[in-house]
Image (cartoon, rainbow, N blue to C red):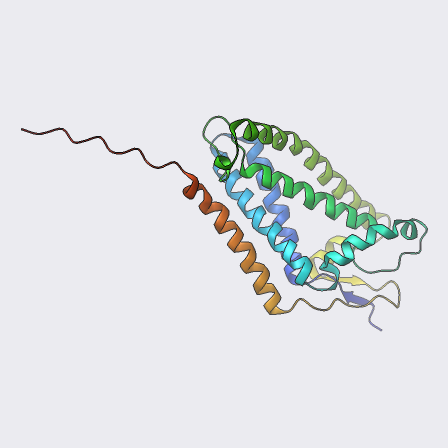
Length: 232
């Protein structure tokens, strides 16, 4: 029996690090504002695509990326706290952390699509909502920035605790995809075929293209050109 098992597939690992970079960049550019708001919007669309990919990969990906496991794990929180948890992948607290972070990132992304900064920035779906609704979503978007920052901080503290105190190499596992086999019943991930990866990527790209194109589709028609003056 091998002393380690494959837990996280390559697409999931690439998603994880890409999302971390995109969210960090979006938070930074949104905090500074100004001319960086253009990049804030671009990063927001990137996060939208990443979240769409993760949603589909949770249905089509390998064993431990599946939503069925992530949603089922918190139901066994009692077993975990009592020391009876022997599953590979996310434990119940880890699953709750994943759901909270992805849920808040999704809220920030969706609210940002209809947000505005009262100066020069408007989300691509701004014209689909009333002005008051956009203002309300913009306020929630700004306030949730602090909540997202707090969740990221808790996430990092949890990684430090599990790495330094419980000696579980979580970061290394998200780099090479392998985790120590702690119990005989733990098994390697399976599934996540190339066709599934293609479907997930295509779905994510199609969504981003549609949302990005919506800004042009929803733009008001250009004002008619003034008649040219007669040149005698």
